[in-house]
Image (cartoon, rainbow, N blue to C red; front, top):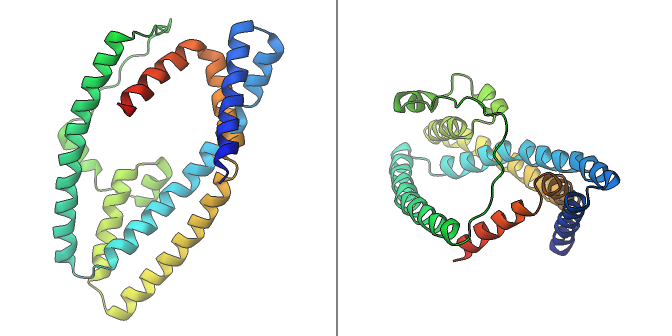
Length: 223
């Protein structure tokens, strides 16, 4: 992956979007909108490989442990580490963002039409959704968390079967994972065009205010 080319694609996309937003020239507006499919194709390609890559990687890692009790202990430790680091990170991030938006307020355009807010699912609904009734449907819908739970259970069950069968399944999953790693490398080579197609239409539509908000966000993350 050429990082310089990706950075150049981002810069060109931002420049085109800013020119289209600042000048209101119809040709630039059409050009910024016309490159949007490049960004859509890039995002779709990334999403195409993320789920199978995550599933095969998790499956191999957990199935190699063998003993389901070891999997349970490791899962409990990982869950504790996740919440122990995520909650403080959320609190710190919200605090810094509140401070940053107070010091450097960014004007946000309010949409003329406001959609009705969807009701948030309750705790019981969240728990019930962790076990997918159809893992293939969960994969198609992009429901990553239920799919991860299914993969963990499948890998734990694999660790409990005979050694020969377990090794065959692990080898198969490793081969599939290697194929998707190669595929994602190919996709990332198209990142310059994809980033260009993502940046140009968004900046053209939202203007300099988007970059100001993004700058505040980046500064907050760096700090």
